[in-house]
Length: 97
Image 1 (cartoon, rainbow, N blue to C red):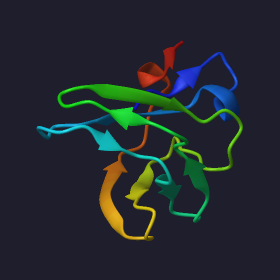
Image 2: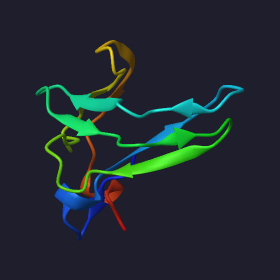
Image 3: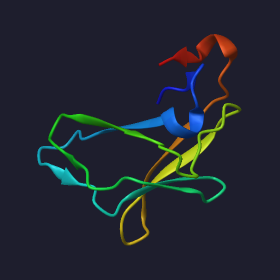
Image 4: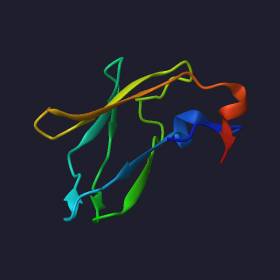
């Protein structure tokens, strides 16, 4: 996950999803959710084995807090499949995109 300074976070914040399995994964209907229960819809995304996809926020309400927090990957059935907790980010760690 990269936090993009010097640009609009509501547009350019992003989540990188990596398929470590042996078969393609269809993420249609999947979402990413922050602790405030805001949702980032993943749209129609298929991740091939060993590949990664980057999903930009594009103005959707889910956000990654620079003071740290947890985001969850949610299946279409509403099940939390994975969660990631991120520490606070300092100004020195923010990258320009």
